[in-house]
Image 1 (cartoon, rainbow, N blue to C red):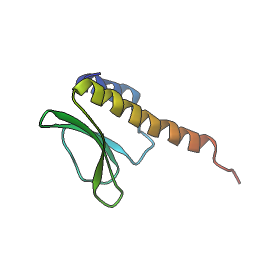
Image 2 (image 1 turned 45 degrees about the vertical axis):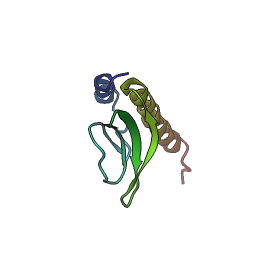
Image 3 (image 1 turned 30 degrees about the horizontal axis):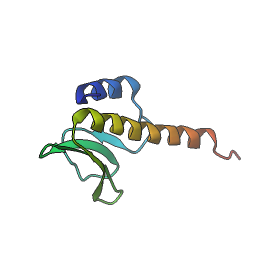
Length: 92
């Protein structure tokens, strides 16, 4: 999917509404709890930032579509993990 398609789905689905994470798709931002994607010298990079600063590149792609398909999967994995935790907490 393109960046614009990803952004539309992000608004409609709001996949990280209960998460500490946010999504950034224009540039590399070194703030805590970000999943992001940006283009640098023709390479599309999907990244995650750490809680106390710093980031790491999860994966690089040669085209926008593959990068945003992958970012979508990463974001949805986070959403699914949050839902699982929410639904399987021990209750006192």
